[in-house]
Length: 340
Image (cartoon, rainbow, N blue to C red):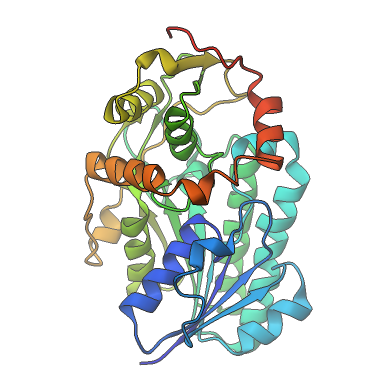
């Protein structure tokens, strides 16, 4: 089998790792990467495959039908990573999230419907379940998003499901937990904490730091998406999680301890509005397809820390300019740390 896969948002964190994964695991596949190259899209994420004859990059917006349709027509499958994805930014400007995360999938779905693709995979998030204080969310649980970001992702999901039921588009949806690994834009908590610690800057912890997340290595996440793409049942949803529960203080402590930095760098800041205290997903349905984890949380975090420690040339330029302005406006913290 030789497929051409259209990966949207393939210059972002998980998308770029998935592009690299496909090219490594499927020598007969071709990959088209469509990315708008917004602030978090970075072609440096894919420098190592840029000259691979099986890889093609197209700069464009998934909401532009004239860009999307010709690419979908050349593809056997679509995997949609393209999204605005940061909760804090969605609180500041919800409108852009609705455009990319709802209108974008509509355009892709229409093109897929017209072109007769074999598979359409929508990459979503565990945040669509909302706050889960006990137990773990299953795919049949109701959606209860609590931020503009998660609400826009839930809206996109519902649209995807409607195109399967109404038009027979062969859709699948994945809901991944917090993903870590190389090439993640440093506004997200793990690379933010790591890079701040490396520079001896405070690690800003929301509120008391008791919010719990499930952290999965990006390779395990990509392997899960691959399993769904090739073996998932059309019309179904699959959780992708690592079954760990780590709060923010413990996460930050593990990072500074590994780097030999003082815990005095942990600094509490004003909590995020509507901050969900816990996410947890049950990945049993995906495991039944044959998927399993390669990384423990400890291994995933330590490998991630080492990557950022060894690749300053990737993240140092990012943390200047727009990022620096956003960071200073958002956290409003002093550079002199104190005991948390």
